[in-house]
Image (tube, rainbow, N blue to C red; front, side, top):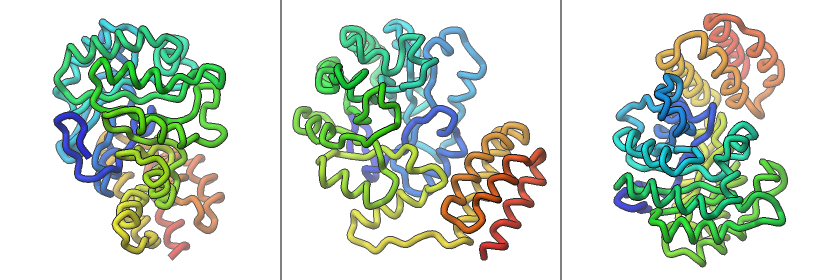
Amino acid sequence: MVIGALKLKNPIISAPMAGISDLPYRLIMKRHGAALVFTEMISANGLFFNGKATRKLLESSPEERPLGVQLFGESPERMAEAAKQVEDCGELIDLNFGCPVRKVIRSGAGSALLREPEKVARIVSAVRNATSRPLTIKFRSGWDHDSVNFLEIARIAAEEGVDAVTLHPRTRSQMFGGQADWQQIKKLKETLSIPVIGSGDLFHPESIKNMFEQTGCDAVMIGRGGYGNPWIIGQALDLLAGRSVTQPTSEERLSVVRNHFELCLETFGPQKTLGQMRKHFSWYVRGMENAAGFRVKINQTKTIAEMSCHLEDFFADAA
């Protein structure tokens, strides 16, 4: 898989996700085989005003390279300036034209830009002229059912010089409901000469294999399917190579959860780790016996020591 000057070791990518794809999460996904990982969404306006919280999202580790940096914003000029500022923070820059969250939409960014193809063109052109890094966009099918325009947006982006596109085939109005329309990815692949990355409803290794087969996409991007399940990457690579797929043992699962916990503590300290790891712990134990009771305990923890004890006790009982 090649995106501009960037050659990836395999075609499985971990998605940029606000509140999720922080440094600890990215390291876990990288260690499980992701060819490319992404920062959380980085606000061009936040960089313009030199926001400390925005800058902190760019903290990285050599181990996670290659790293993609995703930018969002509504101003071509600020997006171009942001691209210059983050150029040395990663190996690839992605522009977000798909975020459906109301706060982002109100600012005129994310999937709100799907209603303004001319502005999409101006943003992509400005960023392309500002950086020599491989450049991609991530976008949705359209604003709503009556304005599906993913082919137009992709054509514009390709004409303005992006090196690849990622399509999540749902409209903004769908949010994450319903079923992703993979046939749109297939249609996009048949239309473009640059690489097409598919996203949407990739929750099992079999669904990843099916997306490749049904759409002809060049790579896949795993989002929600990676929550508490980094093993999906290696399993999908095994399946694609014709090897048998194995499930992690309880001991293997605990080892990864501990590792994620430690990385979070090292990166953020105790207070933020409590908040972050509540959701991750809950995802890691999905499908395990007594997971519901464990989630209740974890959500009531007030100290790192208490959280660690609950974790060890749960897996000791599961052994």
